[in-house]
Length: 269
Image (cartoon, rainbow, N blue to C red; front, side, top):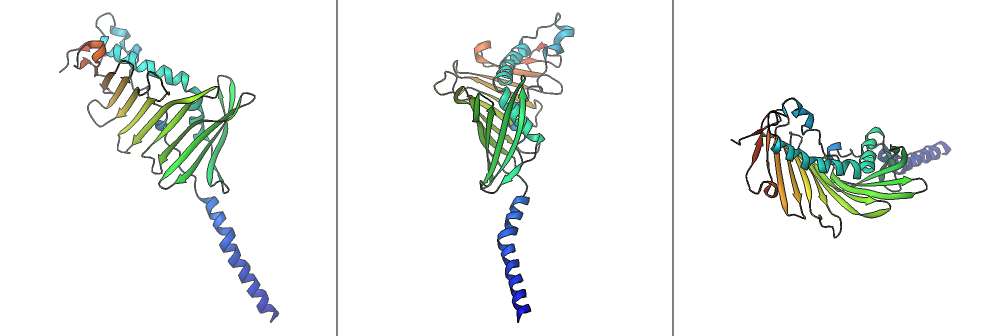
């Protein structure tokens, strides 16, 4: 009888292991949710040609149309590069690290240090599943200055087709600064919009909207200046570099103004 009891005890123990231990192991073995793509956070300003492309023929032609488009885009490029340097750096660094699952909180965490302008920041990005989406939170710490500052948060579809981020200004003056909406369809089309959400700000509602589309002009920017109630539309071919711009305030009309493959002004077709 004793061997039978021993076998029964072993069987019960085995069942308990299957019921309570193995499920936990299985959860820990589940892969972390995929991070949203880099293009969900960082607008690609490199698609637009630079002033260097005009050097060879600058004295022969007018570059007013392309130049105006370039200056409008450059303003936002500077704002993002300077104002969002730490948030951008903290997000891009996450791709170089593996997530750790925390069963008590039912989330995954990417933890690492980020160095910007000679300063070291501790970053902790967490993600947890919510239906068919992933909820994200980025907290940043800088020794002797601030701790666990929720610099940005967001939500994305688990299939990485779209989502949003909400960014705060900075730890010393924390107010909502920017909303980023993004989408991609994996067939060549994608978009990214930065919208000013500063409470009570004169430019609250202003935005820059960048897109990639399957068209002859395969790139575009829409730039809305809320304070002036003015929408600037820019479309161009990122390979041939030709394009056009519409800016009612600057040109005092609602027409397209074109530039050619050498960026020089041309008559619109």
